[in-house]
Image (cartoon, rainbow, N blue to C red; front, side, top):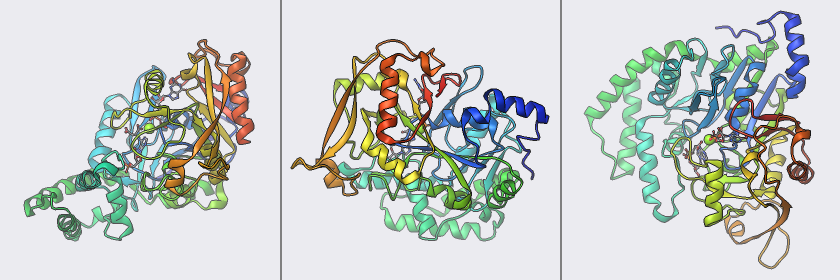
Length: 455
Ligand code: 2SA
Ligand code: GDP
Ligand code: MG
């Protein structure tokens, strides 16, 4: 397998012209390995930026999560695609898409996604590589996800029920079945039997019979055949590509506030959507990691349970949800909405060391007469909270101090130059930059590919 280089796909002069006009200098991502990561609780619009940037990269890779992710992108004709496992570089036909070792792969879902893309004219053959080290996520993991949530009753996490937690549990407890195990159908049934009987022992509601195992094994024999051309040692492919000076863009799923270590535990996902997940989920050395772009919505959303300090409850939160069309890409669940939380954003920037930010959905705030920014957390006794607390009880009890900025109350969705934004919108952007200390290089003013301002 070989990855065609972005630089060698056109003549040198064409490449120079491209870079000079609207290429690499404009996007500011000059490092060999760059990444796009979520700064809040997911759905910041990571997919859109990755789709736009893809043409400047040879490889776009996912390093963690699974089909819990929902990344919405639009092609040049405005056709909408919702991606879950396939990286958002897939619409750019020169890009190779890698599903790294850190991803948990539900094969029926992956094939459904590939079929949907092919049906819509997007060729996937030879363009998607799945790591032989990635773990298989079975239907039973999804059933167990639902059973665990039911057991938790009122304190449920609000997972996507895509089986993510149970699959990572299998991986970490070392019972997991990996993509490379599909090449050993002699031992596969035994491994799967162990997983299924374990689940049956743990959950009364889990129905399991020898027929079910037989059926699942037969299904996976067919999947194994179909998957074979997609399977690769992606650690080798990625590192060989790095050695050949090719460019790699890593697409994060979920976000730092959902990170199993840094997020609002236990109301988190089961992977590492922060910078560290790039190294462990793709086999890329930390020294090689370059520019990371943090994607942050101009307000905040969260789907599922857990603390949300700047949440707007009631009718006003509903208005923001309606304006931003805040419904889950994977599950259709309504997202909780609130003001931009600068305390959480600074914490996220600290962990990830972003070189720049993409502020998305600024257009959604256009109708508001005033906009609030959560700038400080205070304990109930009035003393400031020094940094984002790990203790959920502290987080649930604190008070947020807000700054109030004027709104601009006009349509900005057609604006393409930063200087053409209304003064109040620029002031909002610049106040965030000032508070966080990281430049905002990209500003989203609509869902479409063209609705992006380069600042
Ligand atoms: P899980 O399924 O075990 O990863 O759920 C654990 C928590 O992680 C949250 N989570 C997400 N939050 C926002 N967006 C996600 N993707 C979909 C989307 C979500 C959807 O793009 O809209 O469609 O509902 C995502 N994936 C996981 C989840 O809500 C739990 O809080
Ligand atoms: P992701 O998971 O971070 O890729 O984000 P999602 O795709 O789940 O959710 C972001 C939603 O906002 C999608 O429907 C995007 O099409 C849309 N979107 C992205 N950027 C913008 C923007 O700047 N303005 C508006 N109005 N919508 C946007
Ligand atoms: Mg999403």
